[in-house]
Amino acid sequence: MSNPEDKPAELLCEASVAGGVEIMTPRDVPLGGPRAMRVRRTLPQRERSLIGAWCFIDHYGPDDVADTGGMVVPPHPHTGLQTVSWLFEGEVEHRDSAGHHAMVRPGEVNLMTAGRGISHSEVSPASTTRLHGAQLWVALPDSARHTDPGFAHHAPTAVHGDGYEARVFLGSLLGDTSPVETHTPLLGAELLLGAGATVVLDVDPTFELGVLVDTGLVEVEGVEAKPSDLAYVPPGRALLTLSAHDRPARLLLLGGPPFGESIIMWWNIVARTHEEVVAWRAEWQAQITHDGLVDGWFGVPIGDERPPIPAPPLPNARLRERR
Ligand code: MN
Image (cartoon, rainbow, N blue to C red; front, side, top):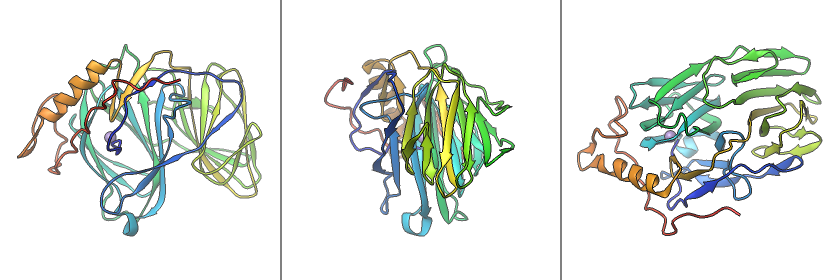
């Protein structure tokens, strides 16, 4: 997915570790297009911009595609990050400039590594009538951010227990480990909780955690989170208690050790300096011609002739510092 903001600010993102469970509420962002599918964004925010290496969390749907037009995100670039796509309903067709053409399906993770630069497109096919999922980004550490672009897919086997079902798509939980390689320790899992169920999870005490609620009401260590809320749990606990109220609940559990590097996020770019943002933006704009997208730093997604998304104007302010 592409960050659809018209005038995105440059954000300095730094780890910030707090005391107790914090509820982060979403803001609505239109994805663009005439009927404008909307996403609910909980990361980054002014108060907190990273959970481990997770740096961007959009939750969307369930949308009736007849109303929203579905997902149509033409070719756009990324650098310095990985995109993690997870669907609850519907399908999305992915094409990228590293030569990958794949479908994103419910319960199967697609992870795209931008590394030094990639371009891709994401379009829901005509067969998708309802669309519901999450688009997540992971910041790459300095040691890996100039790596070659790549793509990984994994369909985790469900882990069943008393009152819950889990799918571990990144890292380890409940005895299952995802084979998908990451550049910092990460956790990504979907959990379904039965009505009234409580689950106590063994978690890595060096990890900070985020619980993104999809459906139902979830108590995270006794603190209630609503759909699209992100509950932040600071590092330091080896057990995490999650409870569903009187309805079943579905959530994503994300985590990792505090990132430890400051990053600058602008549009679809994760950088370290303003100069990098300016240079990468110029590389993308140089690929956009009257004849469409031509080859360059970010390449051209295979088999996609749609006109590319131009970069928004650079922010007037050099950098919006975080308090
Ligand atoms: Mn994207």
